[in-house]
Image (cartoon, rainbow, N blue to C red; front, top):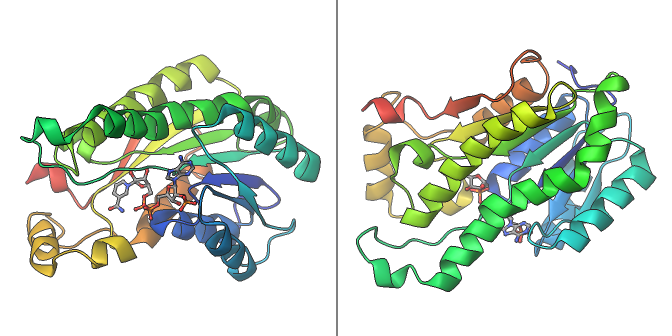
Length: 254
Ligand SMILES: NC(=O)c1ccc[n+]([C@@H]2O[C@H](COP(=O)([O-])OP(=O)(O)OC[C@H]3O[C@@H](n4cnc5c(N)ncnc54)[C@H](OP(=O)(O)O)[C@@H]3O)[C@@H](O)[C@H]2O)c1
């Protein structure tokens, strides 16, 4: 269903495991997609070539979310190429596994990297693209920000203590920004449980099976299911803002 026909979406971390599925989902819904990359320029360009065609051309653009000057340059380039941005998906994120009890291993450098990427990054992307998003609604567009959070925000179970805290901060920021940017811009979180990405597929199968077993729906999320929630948040859920949409098979219930 092309419910976002003719609109322009920017996806940070667009060449990653979930980012790729989200870019494909938005293109299938009719968006021209800007695949934002940091280090993965080659995969981002290759993805652009594979995306289903929309009315406007897709693009791969550099988008390091910890660098405000680069985000300003990205916004200027999106304005020059398209004259609009209707959907911003903040999907870029980082983490590293650290047992929650090992406080010394979660050093300040890792903490700063996680918070700068996962919390300051989405805020800075919204700040940079706000003028374009502000114009979207008046032009009949979605005018929406979708932050990719994690169920770790709720369960406090995840790759490390600060990763969980960073995703709780994202959900809180979703609510603040939804209030502050209304009525022009809607802001939502999509909050996946463990997803079946290539990275997760490379993990210990016994651990993965255990995660699936502890999930009421008895499996991990497919990246396409996360993408479907993003497309719904951007399109069909037009009277929803400040909400956190779980895509977790009921994991926190078990
Ligand atoms: N996979 C899961 O099970 C799961 C579950 C819940 C939530 N999430 C969240 O979903 C999002 C995507 O995760 P994923 O599984 O797709 O991970 P991934 O494959 O490792 O992708 C991470 C993406 O973030 C980008 N990135 C990292 N640091 C960046 C920076 N400083 N500036 C710009 N981009 C940066 C990377 O871009 P480059 O490669 O170009 O450097 C990459 O595209 C993350 O926010 C993650 O926390 C994932």
